[in-house]
Amino acid sequence: MFTIGAVIYIGLLFTKLSHILISPLNVFFRSLRPKGALVTIVDIEEAEAFGVSKIEDFIWKQLLDLDACTRCGRCQDSCPAYLSQKPLSPKKVILDLKALLLERSKAKSPDNNGRALIGEAILEDEIWSCTACRSCQEHCPAFIEHIDKLIDMRRNLVMEQAQMPETVTGTLRSIETRGHPWRGTMATRMDWTEGLDIKHISEAPDAEFLYWVGCTAALDDRNQKVAIALSKLLQAAGIKFAILGDEESCCGDPARRMGNEYLFQLQALKNIETLTKYNVRKIVTACPHGYNTLKNEYPEFGGKFEVVHHTELLAELLWSGRLQITRGEHGIVTYHDSCYLGRHNDIYEQPRRILSAIPELTPVEMVRNRREGFCCGAGGGRCWMEETIGVRISHLRVEEALKIQAQILATACPLCLIMFDDAIKAKDAEESLKVMDLAEIANEYCIIRPT
Ligand code: SF4
Ligand code: SF4
Image 1 (cartoon, rainbow, N blue to C red):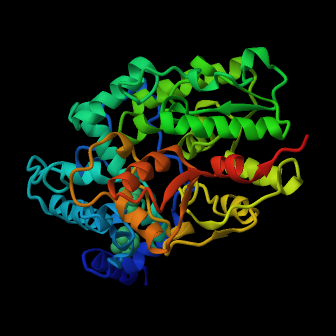
Image 2 (cartoon, protein in one colour):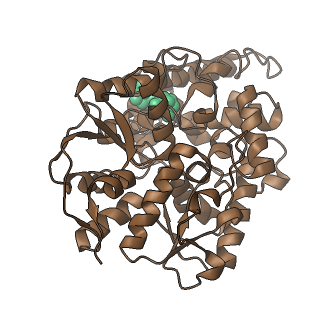
């Protein structure tokens, strides 16, 4: 009986039907990590090689993924890179990796390396086109993990071969030398606080929350307005909070997703040390990337904090009456789900609760929303890379907002805000559509603060 089963199994492995056996196995062995956490390179100081340069370097579960693919194409159908004519299809990546694995298994000599993994089976432009938006994985019925494989190849390119787009080199260097990815800015992390009574954590040891401002809200002109709006709302609600100011450093999300795991781990350890020094327990942030990194990735390095996104906190403050809405604003608003808040962390309803609490403002959904939400194009470190191939992902999303005649495109992520601000300008649509963070909408339009 066993022999017959084994023969059928081995026979199926080499046919197009192998997925019938492997898919259920793959579902059984699916990752139990938090959805937003990338795989860590443990003992990085001792590692002899970084990332994956040969098909054999993938671990057994990554290879099992290749056999589990049913070729259904759902990953490709929702991939923003593919839909914007970039040279990346998550389905094709899996099938190309499987083809390479088969080639290797049939090679007559182990010395015959055949086609190279990076550059031949998978092109560098494919590897760099991914926004790590998680749409492929969210739609895959076989629980195949595309992102880790692409990041493993980026790790090899960056840490082994020092081969990457110039913009990636510049961004990583900026994080390394200045603690943030925004090359060229002269702003400091304290500039936006001018005129506001915001304390450094050392002056407010009784603060309930540490406000993790994030590099973009602290240093980008447009996003500084969000930091100001959120601070005013927290002050109005009587929330005691403080910031790290110049002691805050990049959370490491861009470095990790660009493939520099070493730099990410340095940033994580440095920030955890600072947060621990000030005995921080609760953190609020308006950046879904910082939220995801601090909440889901820092625990592996000893940083265990209660992390909330500002939309969670604002929804709670409105629900409890600590913030009150007394007037509305006529208009159509549509909420754009940030990939790192939505698909990576399942926060879909709190942002919508903030909008629906505002009288006269009419929330309308874009066709692709919640789990189906379409990326802005900035994740996976893409915010700091050139987007020269195909159409811009942010333009496709803004077109969806224009199609439903939205007047406000509401966001809850500093990177989405930057991408859409640029896209609206590029499309000459400033007269009909503006992009605002939910904190700005709450603060500028609709909140009367309890006295
Ligand atoms: S993570 Fe997003 S961009 Fe990357 S392959 Fe998957 S769907 Fe495409
Ligand atoms: S969604 Fe999953 S099973 Fe379907 S083609 Fe993509 S990787 Fe294969």
